[in-house]
Length: 124
Image 1 (cartoon, helix red, strand yellow):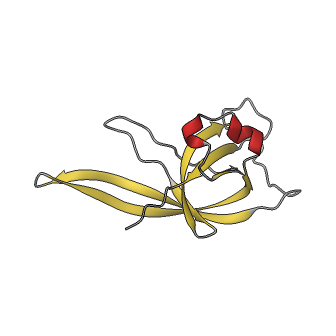
Image 2 (cartoon, rainbow, N blue to C red):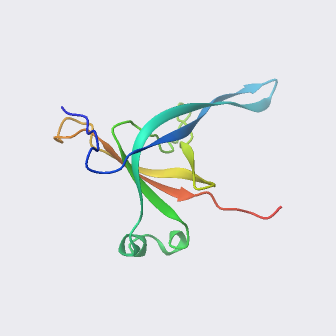
């Protein structure tokens, strides 16, 4: 299968922050170190009708989607799971909420479509 080059659209480098696997040390949870994964993406804001189709509680969040030939991870719940990847875009940190994986051999161009929501800011 072919990996898309995104030649007709603009692609930019994006650094993904992947949380390391944590573990218990002397009874205390210690989070593993973050690793940085550099990928090339075409990033776009969601359209208003796409946001309207979301649950009401998610409609006020800032959403972006990106297309990439490189994989990004969303949350996997289990004892052998992992945390969702995060990235920084225009000064705000975003968490990957959904990944549409088209790297299964069924698509002409192998890529992922990733939806990310801004991590809510809380006052100190």
